[in-house]
Every structure is written in structure tokens, then in C-alpha cells.
Image (cartoon, rainbow, N blue to C red; front, top):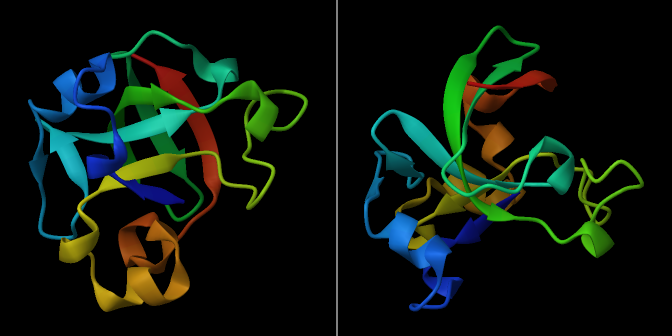
Length: 123
């Protein structure tokens, strides 16, 4: 899943992280080489923590925790979002997203992100 970064409160810690970020060619927000994401509390709640994500298609990439999903919105393990089953929620600039992402509603429509999550390991 994804959320536009401009929905964040301007006086929040989350926004302070966004101020360090840039938008890549796919509309995804990044700090350095790490994609900005929200995760369930299962993975941790310390903003700024970095993780390595491995997908079933062989893609491996870095993410940085810039927001936390509320436990009430996640499964019993606080990993997956109840509404769509997603684990990672990417922060994006919606106006810069490819049409394939806007149409599908998921970052996984991009080839690099097309696999299912195999592992998320804190760095």
C-alpha cells in the first residue's frame, strides 16, 4: 500500500523525516537509498530504524521506518494491514507515481516490487 507524504502533520517527527527525503523516479520517497515506509509494531516503533527487505522475486532493498501502523489496523501479530493485507506502506508523492501504481493501488505493480515479502530484517 502507499500514502502520500503530504498527509502527515507538519509538526510531527514523521514530517521531520520527510523533510530529509526526496522523491525518486517512481514517485517513492527516500532518504539516501532507503524507501520511507510505515510498518506494524511487530517490526518496531522507533522512527528512523532501517531494515532490509527481501522479496520472493529476488529484489532486496532498504527501508526506513518513518511512521507506524496503528495496532488496531493490523492483524493479531501487528504485521499486516487488515484492510488489504499489506506489510509495507510506502510514502509517496502521488502526483509523481506511474499510472500503473495509481490504477492498481499498489507499489507491487512495479516490477522491482512485484514479489511477496520473504523477510524484513532490522539493520
